[in-house]
Amino acid sequence: MSNATVVRSYLDAFTSGDFDAALAFIADDFSFEGPMLQSVGKAAFIEGSQAAQAMARGYTMHRQLEDGDDVVSIYDFELGAPATPGTVLMTEWNTVRNGKLASAKLVFDTAQFAALMPQG
Image 1: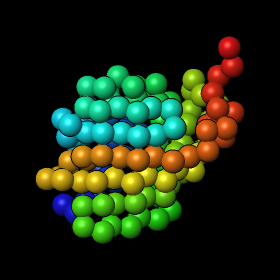
Image 2: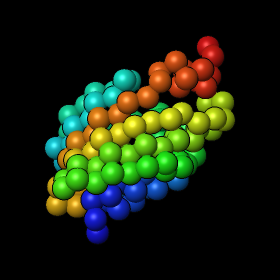
Image 3: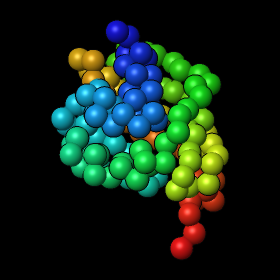
Image 4: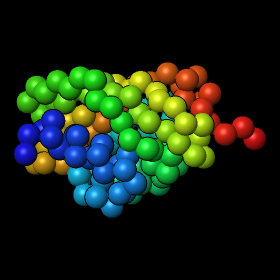
């Protein structure tokens, strides 16, 4: 399985509601950096990403580039209830080692994301 396929398989599982399958692609020492979550370790990521996973409704990949262990993906992240249905353009840089995500750096427009969040 190519590193790009590992990332797509993770995104497929994460955005379809199969959190257990998504976590199978994450290394125990996984580090994550994003505008709303920074975590080190699989357990910390699980705890911090549950709200986003609950709103995930899919994604549309626009472009993916693979260079050795590094994979950069540009995609529309599709959201639904409890968020207002909509999409947010995201760019994610993953490092894959031994078939698992070792790290991720996620960039997106937080104002666009916040506009889709429930008020109150």
